[in-house]
Length: 125
Image 1: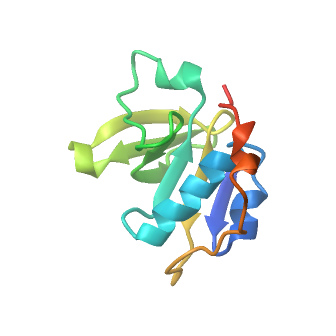
Image 2: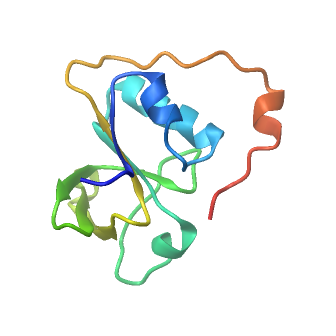
């Protein structure tokens, strides 16, 4: 696979990722706890702006998208958003971070943080 692919069974799996920022990592945990999707991908701004990609980000994050990912090749994920009639595209493994819910995971316990920990959180481009 790739070192930007994480099977998530606990907060530590999400925290180990270099990207996204802490606020988006919290959002990944929330998405998995809401049980709506099993795959969350973090995308840099330049990739979201690409003309050949039709990817919608989640509420409260400019860089996270939900859907399904297939290991298309050594260098690319095939990403689709079934809730958007399969919209998506091919994503370079070297540029995105993919989180996949581990089997049997119902929710992700996150560390308690004060509001000041999010004060300086900035978007990672």
